[in-house]
Every structure is written in structure tokens, then in C-alpha cells.
Amino acid sequence: MATSASACLSKVVKQRYMELPQGDKVQAMYIWIDGTGEGLRCKTRTLDSEPKSIEDLPEWNFDGSSTSQSEGSNSDMYLIPAAMFRDPFRRDPNKLVLCEVMKYNHKPTETNLRLACNKVMDMVKDQHPWFGMEQEYTILGTDGHPFGWPSNGFPGPQGPYYCGVGADKAYGRDIVEAHYKACLYAGVDICGTNAEVMPAQWEFQVGPTEGIKMGDHLWVARFILHRVCEDFGVVASFDPKPIQGNWNGAGCHTNFSTKEMREEGGLKAIEESIERLGKRHHYHIRAYDPKGGLDNARRLTGRHETSNIHEFSAGVANRGASIRIPRSVGQEQKGYFEDRRPSANCDPYAVTEALIRTCLLAEEGEEPTEY
Image 1 (cartoon, one colour):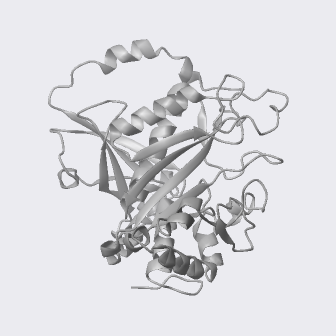
Image 2: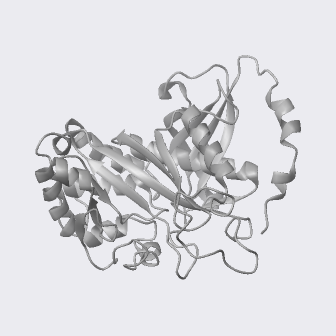
């Protein structure tokens, strides 16, 4: 299994430099989503003082022709700061800055889905929509081979790995623990983690988080995971079906509730939302992976704890359904539901916006409504 040569560099030597004082200056790492809708890019600038809010951060630019976001003849793109976090790699007072990307004419790029999502969230803010997203991922070597798997074969069949303990069951826990602490330091709303069904596959959960913050926090949690893996010389893959055959795929199950759903008798509102979702299944499938459903088709086969991509279903405690109502929600008659269809490489802005449009704005049909 190949690992990155950078993992062999002495981190002890690096730490000597990282501990040097930096005076009153602050390093701000600007992060953005590239033209694939999946990849993240970053670069750093020096600020004269520590920013206290988004308003203290200057706009910036980059070469969009190198990120599949523009042509070389008109390549300047604008970075608009949208959310700020503490930097767990350089530490305080340094910052991570999640940005929206705008074209030369200050219109959003095709993969800037935050702008539209934020507009929709503002329309329903009085309903206090909460989200919790369960991000599954697979740890790979730089050669694309799953971390810890035999170089010329396969590990034992699935069964002992989910929430497993022991060197023969948990592959790569160091990365998981480092990522968890780094997210807590940064201020990401990470709420848990566990080993998943396929060996070298893990999950972390973000939430409950309200409105636009869901997408912001999940994207930054993904960025932090990529950086942690970079230090360890391995790769985090969000491919929905990284290994073909009798192995689980990777999703991003999305839990959703509103103030009405969380209050007494909220099950009625949950059931109404599920009925609306059932009438708009194909719209959601298109929104739930960056390739309009093509990636998810490899995962949503009706096997390995998934529903069939062509059919909508719902049930209490059913992990083979499109929508799962937790058993406790059925008993208490209030709470939330889980949409199990989003793929691991989904854009959380697209997923949360689609849920709001269908469940709260009662949109119908195959296309989103223009407001």
C-alpha cells in the first residue's frame, strides 16, 4: 500500500518552526470548493490583526483556470469570506476561512451552491430547521488501495468492523481521533464518530446545526479531514462505492427536523414531509450527488443497507428505506427523520436546500422554483 512521501518527513523538525512567534500577524487560510463540486482548494494570506468577524476579512481572488472554474483568458475569480473557524494546524490566532466563489461579473460559479441555499434558509428561518449529517468516508493509500487491506487480497468479510475495536478490526483510528480533536478545536459542530461496516471506512457526524451552518460546518470538517490525512500520508475518499462487490458503500445520511416536528404531536408534520418527499424522489436523487445521481446509482442498489435508487420508501427503524423514522420518534410521536439517500460526496448545501424546498416550501415537480 503506497503512502505519501510527505508522511516520512520529520514532524518533530517541522514543529520547531511551527512554535516560532509570529508577532501581531495572523495567517488566514482561505478555503473554497473547486469546479468539480467535490474538491477543496486553499491558500493563505497574512493579516495585520486577528479578525473578530467575517466583516474583518478582505475579499481575495485566485486563478479559476487552474481549478476548472474559468477560462485562461478571463481567469480571475473572487473569494468572498462566508464562515470563519479557528485553525487547528497553525493554532490561535490563525484562522480557516470558508469562502464563496464568484465570477469576474460577481455572479456565483456553477459549484457555488451556498448562495442559493442561504436564500432558501432565510425564507424559513422562523421554522428553525435543524440538520445532522452523517459523513462516511474511506481511508486509502495514495495508490487508491484501502488502508490496512492486504496488498494482494481482501480482509475478512464484513461483520466485525462496525464500531469495532482492535488492530484486526479498526483500520486507521489515529486519523479519526486526530480529526475529531481538530474539529473541536476549530469550532466545528462535530458530535460523534464511529468505525463503519467496511474495514478502513469511518463516519463522523456534524449537528444538530441550524440552517446554512450545516453546509459550512460539514465542508470545513471535510477540509480538516483532508489535511489530517495529508499529515499521515494517506487519502480520505468520499466515493459512494469505493470498492465494488460485497462491500458497503459510503453515504451522508441527513437527519432533518423543524420546530414543529420537535414539539408534541410533531410526528404529523414528519409524515406530511415524507409524503411530499415521496412525490419528488427523482428531484432529490439528482440533488444528492455532484453528478446528478450517477455516483449514487453505484451505491443505492437495494443492498448493503441502502434503498433502490429507482424507488421511494419509508419506514420506522428500516435502514433499507429511503427515509427512516427512528424507533424513538415513532414512540414519542415527535422528533426528526433520516434521509438515507445522499451520497458521501454530496454537496450539503444542495441536500439541505432540497429538503427545505420540498418539505417546508411545499414545492412540486422536477425543477426548483425561482423566488
